[in-house]
Image (cartoon, rainbow, N blue to C red; front, side, top):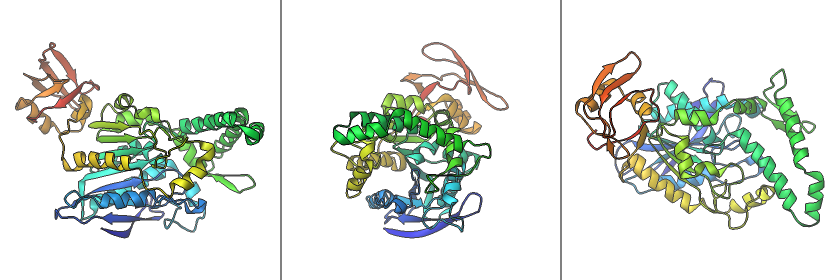
Length: 422
């Protein structure tokens, strides 16, 4: 295993972004699959740390070390970079991080994908994007821009602590959780905090901040508390304008893995219920979702209760722990299936997704060879006439066991499995 510092230009060319590319020992002699890590919100560096807050979790470091030390016949490279204004990815502008918006972060992530695609040691068709927290929330936008840029789409996406969520809902949920924790706190400290922190006061503070963020002059960032605290106003505005649920449903067509712990107090874990997850990504090639009992947002397990009021103390304690073993095991098995085909995968597609992601020639080959397309185990297409339309295919005279079907690619949620004869 070797780790080298590399760099690539930001999407607008205004800053050079630096990161670490960890290459495994590869016994296959072939190009290596790769994982790109997109970290969460805040000034988190390529290693998964926040030096300005003296928070050292080494989340990305540990993940890269684990993935790069897999068996030599199933090697995976890992790439993680300093976002704008963080670590080595800086300019003379000391407020660069606070001026950076959501759109900038997404576009920079696409450039990181481009870097991996063009790397001679990386297999461009076997790249997986891992998003943690905000990285998971913005994943659908990244996939959308990858398609628009004409780049090779990712083989899969992994969502750690953020699948299905959005910044606005997460912030409001955290505000309510803090108010609830204060109400439940016992002793003198609880009494004092209840005098200082109420849901009404938190809401007033929140509304005041949002008023400044949405000021008529649309500032890139705002200063609060006598200039001691800065808020990335543009970033928040762009997040609040982002329809995460709709984009997730429309854009995710690759294999997906979603993990949010039951003790994650920073995002909502309900979206990682397996049935809920399927509804959120109907066009995904496959979706696997987990909610480990003791897993926190830091991707470590916590034995006791997880509370926002104790988060700094909990993070300090968890910084001494390795990444959760269960998360790594789940991720390894998923990567084995998606990147190395070591287990039989039956990807489930929507009809629209399959049509839009394959060429006319490919579709005609399937139909003319009478390959089997199945819906819940039922042969759907038998004798089919294929009529070309300018922007779509129209399948007529479709014979199914449950009767004739007349449909086209706008029939979006007709789910089927691709048979072995494809």
